[in-house]
Image (cartoon, rainbow, N blue to C red; front, side, top):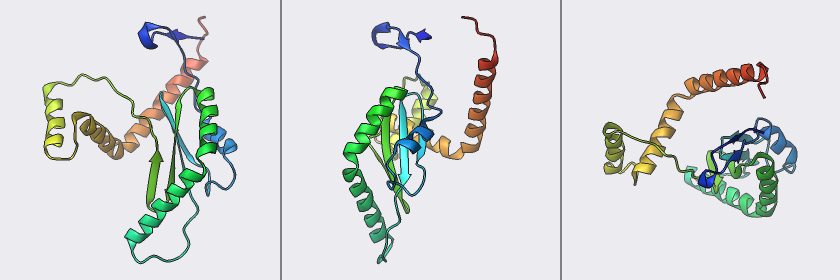
Length: 185
């Protein structure tokens, strides 16, 4: 097992297992009937987020606001009713993948995430970049530089999705080629 110096206090830290099969694992592990189909499972180095679509609401609503309130209420009910079981599934997944697990639900036009991880990111910004963040704060778009940076990252992610997907695919191909190379250990 490869080790690096990423732990607290400079202690060696075991390499994290891949989460390539997380969607399949959650698909097999989740109780039938929770979601209308397979949940969307995304993973990074710190967290796995599982978001499923709940069954559609029945009945009519006076307007979009009433429908949105009903969707939010149904998501809240799902969250409360499945809490204990979600905690147990998350505990098993955290042991398997060594990442925190967050949950979410989608219904109609409403999506809510439950207790997602907010990971601190160290970065060095020069004055022009800091000025952009300060402008976002001054304009009321964000309450702090940290929130402004998160906003900017989300915006770039939304507008550069195709490029980022292509980049991730290329990185996967590089990983595959590395795996095919000689074992130097």
